[in-house]
Amino acid sequence: MWAENARVWWGTNHCLVYFVFWLYNGSVNQRFTKVDGERLRQLRREQALSQRDLSGITGIAHDSISQLETGKREAQPRTIRKLADALGVEPRELMKGD
Image (cartoon, rainbow, N blue to C red):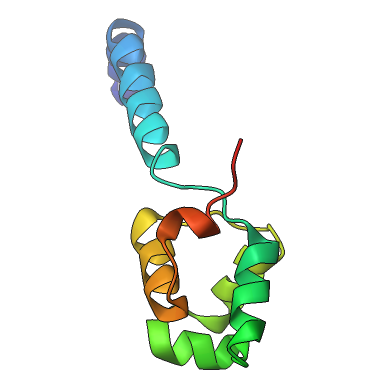
């Protein structure tokens, strides 16, 4: 009985489910920005900071900083802002241009 009801529910509501899934994933993905990892590393090194030092200043995990520098991760605007503030630059200096 439950499986039959689930099929009926799915059949009548699958468009809504897909829409909500699409809406959620679309809005989440738009909140992330590509970081210019080379520029981030250059600025950090110019100030003689290790990734752990920068982590301590910003509160961003050092492994996240490593992933940002190597391009393995994108960042939320607040992360870019924290890094920019710590490095004394404008946030746009850390964002990768398209």
